[in-house]
Image (cartoon, rainbow, N blue to C red; front, side, top):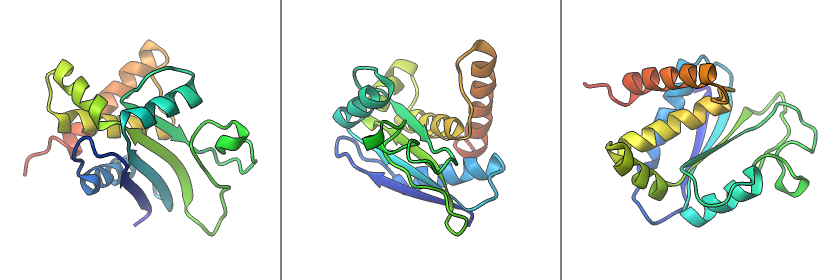
Length: 168
């Protein structure tokens, strides 16, 4: 399989079906045309951990629901290494004989649960949205302006309909 997802539950506040969400990452990447050997990390963390990442890499205080850290194909040491002031929690140079490292998606299930209540959806629906949202960020999508935001939201809903809301 061309997409390898390293998924880990590094929190104990809410139960998370790690394999289910890793499968969603693979489905979204394949639907978006990723056809090369690719590695993605999907991490579920507690509020303190995501707040620390949010502050360290985005300069924002407090916990958030999802963070995405794309890894550039540039093998220069200034990319993603935290000790060198990069833009995310880790990363390695790209080598032709190893899979391409796409990046990391970090989700806080506790914040997702709070958001689910506010949005009047299930926690599973909220986590699915965060997984898809994070993966689309790894693929270069953004929501910095109205047009980008509408495009990204439309694609999120299409992918959720296809892979999360589908009925057997």
